[in-house]
Amino acid sequence: MQYALMIHLNPSATEAMSEEEGLALTEEYMALRSDPRCLDGASLAPVDAVSTVRVQDGDALVTDGPFADTKEVLGGYYVIEADDLDAAIEFAGRIPATRMGGAVEVWPVAFRRA
Amino acid sequence: MIDQVFHDEWGRVLASLVGLLGDFDLAEEVTQEAFAAAVERWPRDGMPRNPGAWLTTTARHRAIDRIRRDQVLATKLRLLVTPEAEEPMTARPAIPDERLELIFTCCHPALAVEAQVALTLRALGGLSTEDLGRAFLVPTETMKRRLTRAKTKIRTAGIPFRVPPDHVLPERLATVLRVIYLIFNQGYLGPDELGAEAVRLGRVLVALMPDEPEPAGLLALMLCHHARRAARTRGGDLVLLEDQDRALWDQAMIGEGRELVRRGLARPTRGPYAVQAAIAVLQTEEPVDWPQVVALYDELVILTGSPVVELNRAAAIASAGEPGRALDLVDGLDLDGYPYLHSTRADLLRRLGRTDEAVVSYRRALELVPSDPERRFLQRRIEGLGAG
Image (cartoon, rainbow over all chains, first blue to last red; front, side, top):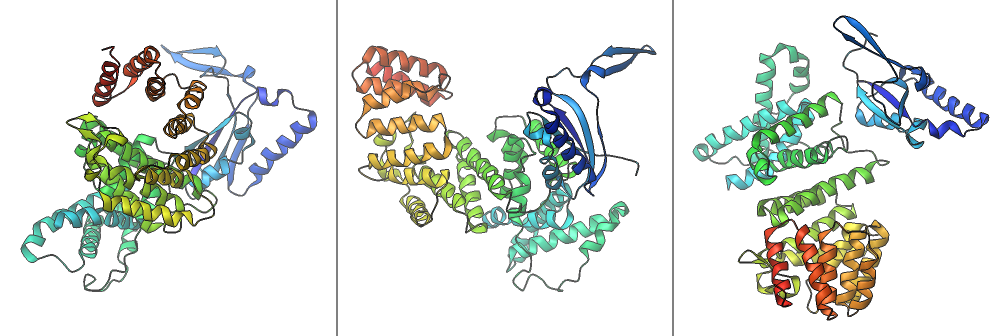
């Protein structure tokens, strides 16, 4: 099965980080991306850069900010191949955000072009 | 007789079919068909020598028929037509017991607690959707949706049919134990059937995990409470432990609980259920060794860190002869919305002769308790203090 792991970050967790700590964290995310089970992944820009699009009566309605205005923000995602939910949970549990006040949603992928 | 067989075999047959098919719904349908076939045939042809194997084989054949009819599922057929003895009902079954896998699937933490509870009772206990709706006070339709949603999640999210590996086993087992205990507590003042069902599930778990101490602890705890069910109420009114008619206690059940606790004591470490069971056993003795109960509560407070446990510990301290110290402890707890904080506090004040304050606390408890027998009990206490 494939799972999309949506990484919700608590931005305040990284604010006070030194450059070294920040680099170590990036390394950790890169290492997970290099895991053979990881099919895809991306790190997303800070929430200040996000726009939300709706279409009303044929017109695009664009608003500043994310769809859901919460303390945690979507910081990135991985798409992984895993035997079952337990294997996906195990992978998700190694994502740094989970121990830094954030959380990872585990979404089974319904369809994805290889 | 057939009823008893059905109850015992439902979970086993269903587990075997889920394991084989990897599809909860199909497994449930063919298991149901096999049981319906048994109801029709056994009274006529006599009970087979190995009812479980008969039911499993019949369910498997139904599944083959279904799958043959449905070419989309053709791949699953290969799995099913593994060579089998012509007459598998005569020998001891080579069918593995996969109920443990089924329990862990039903109690997977990715399912909502209420779904875990309903699914466990449905899959392992064979309770009907109607029974479940009645037991949990929701319409049958709501219960049906709850079960369907859970089964859909098992399929689409890839919840495995497997006993979890060692590194996650303790937390997964804790979920299973909590589900069984929730079922038991639902039956505590509610339908008696659920209490008995939880005890049955506890026995199954102990049989399947004989080396794990906490299932045995939970079973012992439930047995000690279940043994007293006939004495717990009189004419619909609540009867406290010390006022219960001991002749109504099920001594065989208490003996079984005591034996489980005795065996558990030999282990190097104890979990929260084993400690609670030890407390429950002590409370069936005459007289109750209250200092020993307090010592066990000390242990339980460390294990759980729960303020409710601290409240029970305070009550035990009062029973051990120190109501004043107990009151100080109770007043240090942050449990204002919890009715039994106030009823315990009221009881301590009553014993200390502080009647007016006791009445105030009883009234506060009265506002919060969930059941009529409890309300009537508190009302009598208030009247007993001359403040009706």
